[in-house]
Length: 205
Ligand code: 5GP
Image 1 (spheres, helix red, strand yellow):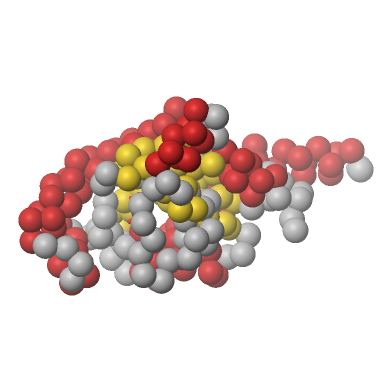
Image 2 (spheres, helix red, strand yellow; image 1 turned 60 degrees about the vertical axis):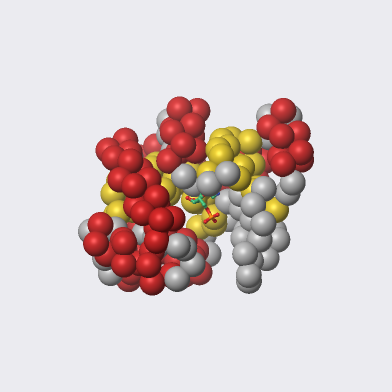
């Protein structure tokens, strides 16, 4: 376990169909020092999703109890279900030195930016609307009207990218993964993130 630094928080948002989840899975598979926070949600698990690994699946009563207890760093209603980030879960990862990715929607991103201004925010863009529409259609999971709804929502979500610190275009998956890792790594090299090292160095000089 790495304990020499406190990890940073990286908010990652995108419109649905942009490939954000695949991208984040690749980053964490290839970089054990980066973890993704496991959200709580009231939506039902999809095929292949594992409780405690993809999400903590809970019922709406339990979710509302956690809201009342102040357990969430942020939470939002997305497509009729609650999703939220646990303060405790994020804190534990950070204290163990991991950089923490919050893979959350734009409403959650806004809340985190407000309460943790030091968090770094990254928006993932599709290369074009045409490609986004093709990706949503090729999933084969949604009816045409739902796809149209998702595309309309995507337009307003993409407008929010203006509020984010970084923008990564997911045209080529390997390049987009490298871009994300570069952002995360360069942040850990900022002077403020290395203050503890500098202090130790001077103490032992
Ligand atoms: P899905 O149900 O497809 O896994 O996720 C739907 C949307 O909810 C995605 O945009 C995803 O990033 C977002 N989401 C997942 N977890 C959280 C969370 O903890 N908070 C917020 N605000 N959004 C989340």
